[in-house]
Image 1 (cartoon, rainbow, N blue to C red):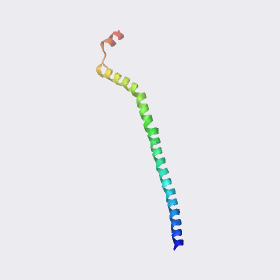
Image 2: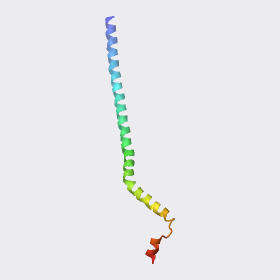
Image 3: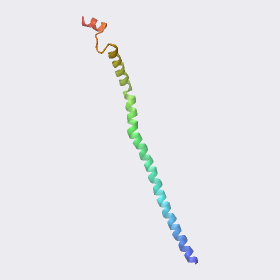
Image 4: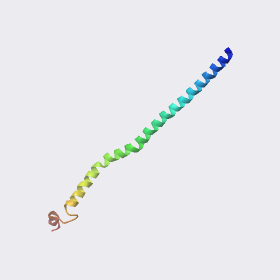
Length: 86
């Protein structure tokens, strides 16, 4: 009877050790997965944000040029243009 209990306890301790290994592997997998998600965000989203900051002055300048064209009537000759022609 006593030997049966020892065998059962030994088997249980082996099973617990195996379960601990499995849980540790699963935990490591989730940690790696979270790190990869952050890397993807950094590699794809950060350049878009940086490009937006770098292109902002160009977009503002382009917007000013478009406003100037629209205020002149889409290419109409203004008085200052006439003076430069003469």
